[in-house]
Image 1 (cartoon, rainbow, N blue to C red):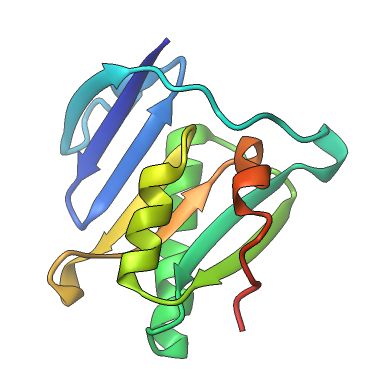
Image 2 (image 1 turned 135 degrees about the vertical axis):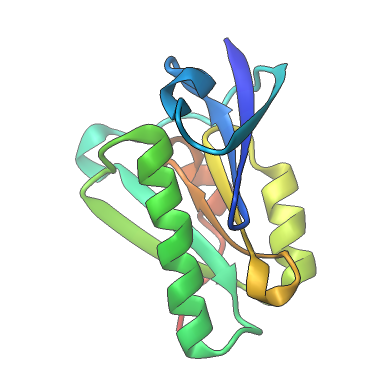
Length: 140
């Protein structure tokens, strides 16, 4: 399977593999870059499937909520209906979020906030990445 990275106006970057690929975005302002497929870190049983959002603790509380919302909406637009459970996690800062996003393999959405000079502010990840995210603290 081919992995796609989609860049949309407004700072949205969607990475991951999907059967619909970039064709599902017809009519949108999208650039597509194809890369070799990467396998996820495993899967979790459907009864505990969770969608994960990770943001930076160094942002203000209101900014964190907005960035999580942006990343989650982008994940749903790219992948369809989300799992019923949502987990919101945090990392200390931009460096930690960037490093985490680079390490994650699988269906990941990265959101770059245009009002912060395009800085990475949130990541949304599918249920298959639960092991890679299990050590992160919940958002406070």
